[in-house]
Length: 341
Image 1: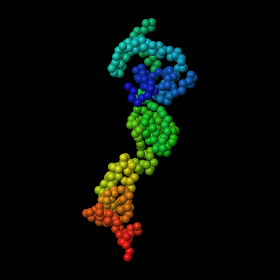
Image 2 (image 1 turned 180 degrees about the horizontal axis):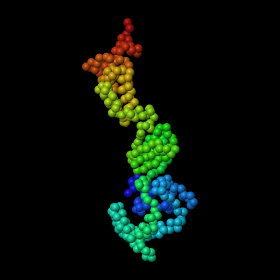
Image 3 (image 1 turned 135 degrees about the horizontal axis):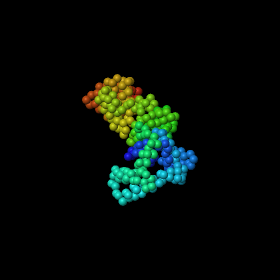
Image 4 (image 1 turned 60 degrees about the vertical axis):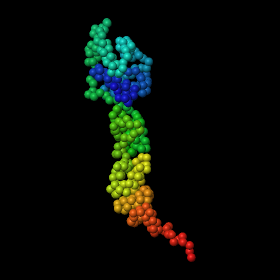
């Protein structure tokens, strides 16, 4: 059975693959109708085959020559064979009820064998014997591997250097943004081509609206950002101290998505490049104590040197008083408000 994602076009091609396997060979020429699953542009003289169908023909090294529109005589033997199958197989099953596809296939196989072994009325032998005598010797051998359906589609690279196929997004090198690529998709892979050269290949994903991204496709600045994870950030914070870890965790908890907190977390941890780890941990402890676990508070504490003041047992009150006792141009002091004599 064909994979569930296959379309009508792929079902049509899969039927060819199974027919070739059943016959044990490949004919030189295939003459189909000009149906949409085979022909992209119908024409009496030069019909245009779809790329997937042509790709299959190249795999089996055969030629496809569609019949002319509304000309059943171009394939008269096929039309007559359809009539025979309807009479000797489908008509005999019209009153039978099946409860699985396997049961139906088993019944069809038995009746097909009976039809092929049924003697001709006016000719010697049977359909099976005439096939072995006339048709099979003229067929080409099967290739080593059966054809795997490939879906061809033109796609446009979005500004986030991803293309969309079947509601999933796959990355390509970022310099191809806004370019048109050709996607060649099988049941297990997605290959992307630009100017007939493969630029990316991904495993096929069925996750709707998900992303499959190779880091090598990202610009250098984005690549560095992708290397950061919440676990890595928390490990760095823990290496500085428990209060730094506590504020970092709080920054993550206040955001609905972890990546929304990356900038604030990295801003906090990067303070260790300007101040040593002891001072940063002390500032975080002070921010936790005064119940202001924000990057802005930690920066202010470090800038004013409040982290270097002693934190007494009555931490919250003392932290506030220590902050107000620091000399500053905008702090006048209580004596400023005393009435002058």
